[in-house]
Image (cartoon, rainbow, N blue to C red; front, side):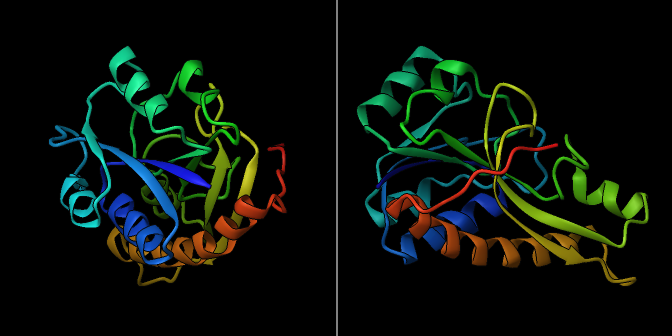
Length: 190
C-alpha cells in the first residue's frame, strides 16, 4: 500500500516517524516550511529527507501543482494528520482508499478547531483520538478508528496532547495493517 503523507504539526511528525518505523511504503510527504498560525508547527522535511522520502513544501494542498505532484506518487491512500486547511474533492477522490484524517475528539462531538482546549473548557470527563475518512465537510467523514481517553483533573492542553498522541500511535499500528489487507471497517458518523 502506497501512502502519501500530509502534515505540519508535532503530531504529524510523530505519526510520520511511526509509519517509517513500521516500514510501510510512504511514497511522498507534503508539508509546510513555515506556518503563521500553528503553535506546534513542525516542518516534516528533515524527517522525510532522512528517510529518503520525496517531500514537497506547499501552502496550498489543493493547487494544481500539488495535486499533480501527489498524483505522480500514485498513492493508494493519503494520510492527512495535522493540516489546518480543508481538502477539496479532486484530492479527496485521487487515491483509491481516500484520504484519512485525524481529530483529537470523539467525533462527531467537538468538531472544528482546538478540540482539546474545548474539552478542558467544557469540563468533559473524556475525549478521544479519531481517525476518519475525510469528505468535503469539516471532520464529518466515516470513522476508521476511535479510542477514548479519560481527562485527568491535572491535565492541561499540553499533557492532553501528549496522551492523545500516544493513544493515536497505537491506533495507527492497529489500522494500517487492516488498510493493507482490506479488513478495515467504516462507521458513519451520526
